[in-house]
Amino acid sequence: MPIYEFRCVPCGAEFERIILPRREDTSGAACPSCGGQQVERKISAFAVSSDATRSSNLAEGRKRAQKDLTEKRDADHQSYVDHVSEH
Image 1: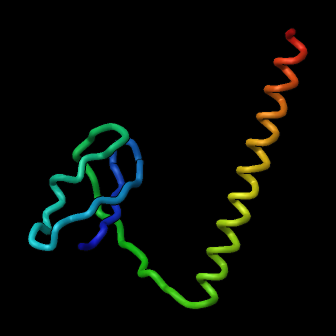
Image 2 (image 1 turned 120 degrees about the vertical axis):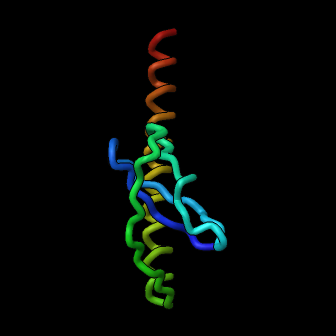
């Protein structure tokens, strides 16, 4: 089943929907942000998969995960420091 990308005309939100092959009309694609029905289908780029793109995506994912982990540790530490200083 193809995944189509849409852009909401009133609010500008971008989202994806799976449209059944038999049903090419996009009338069921309401904006998840504002609920608007006035959406336009975007032209989607095709996916490229190679060793280089997989390695790049994996490295980027690890980098984001490490950043998230560091931010969580910092927040937990600050919460602990705030708790100790209150008591």
